[in-house]
Length: 367
Ligand code: PEP
Ligand code: MN
Image 1 (cartoon, rainbow, N blue to C red):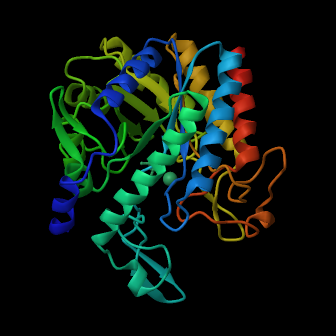
Image 2 (image 1 turned 60 degrees about the vertical axis):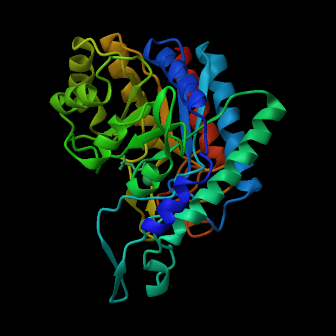
Image 3 (image 1 turned 90 degrees about the vertical axis):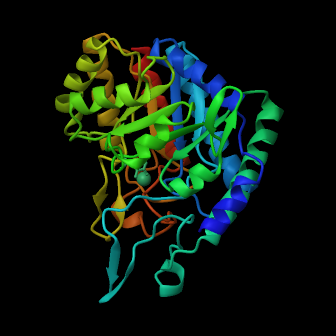
């Protein structure tokens, strides 16, 4: 691990500090209520699937969604992929049991492989190097795509494997930056204020996001603001609430009102997928589009009743015609899930379902 990390410190950074600053300025507009953020992509990127086609499919999906939402809301929509680095997963259980065999859980292609064999599930530090090169290629494809349509498109992933993140951090004239992606977020399971992940995020100048689940207290949020945004710089900190459709209307108001009362200017966006994962009768991990839409609706209701800005959404999606979530215009049913269930981690909205969400969001923001 140390040898690979040392090698990464000598390779070119994947993104530029100036780009991170530019995204921070755009997120400041979200915090002020003058723009929206659309963040989306795979739950976990796959090294086997990485290539120009999957990148273009996700890029086009986010592009279409952003156009639909922007037109209806009358606000610019910032496009931010869960892409070019989203290769590490926190897991609820360290091991997985299938047919009486127990193996380490899959932790993302940065750590081990998804296939249920001892060889694949054994962590391999060389994967950090493979992820770096795959991410560099994906960024190259994204730069080709944005050059062709002249727009800006940013990258993000969960800052989970700190060896990788430290190895790709660089000290620039403007300060220290994590240059593995433009925005990094800290997940629900690693957001302890005294933990290593928050300490890492506090040490870099990128825009940072933190997931806030239903157990988050206003004190947790205020503590995170003090640690991550001591200068109260709009655009530096985004909170991603992921409460679940049944809880958002009860848990979110207190958090938002106490953060607002503290004077902090953070951006708020909604992850309507991670609080709404269920098991299907076929044994697949899935999500109902109706629950996703219901959580987004609750998020908008809460912000509108408090006079704060519902700043956008964070979604797990792919541009392909997979069958991983149920519902939508093409009405994927539980019994359809085995047809094209391809995710290596959480279920993603397919192209049709992503556009369904975009049109519903457009209607909600136009209202
Ligand atoms: C994720 O974004 O894939 C994830 C694991 O989310 P959370 O930290 O909100 O559970
Ligand atoms: Mn996920």
